[in-house]
Image 1 (tube, rainbow, N blue to C red):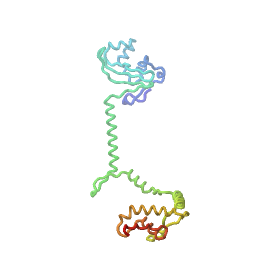
Image 2: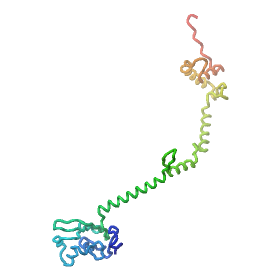
Image 3: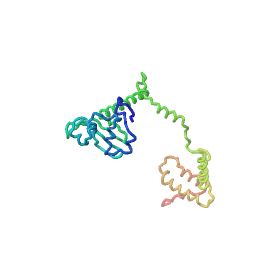
Image 4: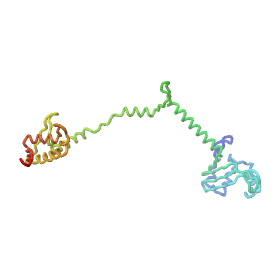
Length: 263
């Protein structure tokens, strides 16, 4: 059975006989290859002469001309047969290689056919790439040449159509407000300012026995050591301003000035 005729390219042909395939081995593979219906077999070869004369295959080495020889066998899947021209018992010239895979015979391509096929494939791919790239080239007398790819336009459209995501959801904002309210009730501020520019008003706590005074003392000491000594004129920091207001309201008395010696 053949998948083509002898006029076709032998590289595109294959042959097999289902009656032989289950019984193929190294001893009968040459008989399988020499079937008359096999288009790869040349019936004018020395193998056919030896077969007609019923001689041993070893007699081929004493003859000259075209012959077939089994050079590799991996039973029961792979067999490699070489077509060669014999010049002497020791000198042969390889002509063609055939391989049998699972009972199907193929002709192995030669080096020229492989290079030709690879070159044609490469040239076709390069030509297709140039034709595709040509569709994205643009030209304008004032701008010159530039590239305009469709994928970039689709990305821009998708980005512009995509809605902007909110930083936080309504649920998250409501929960944060609850936490802030709890923190404010647990730790109320020391002073508050009703309106911008108004005088800060101290906030009384549930323990007015002296906790506020101790905190105010610490702020006064920090302001005296750091900010008040370096600020010119009558400008006061928030701590010194708070201390002056606290002293004015009678929460804490100002420290008495040390008397100089001799007075």
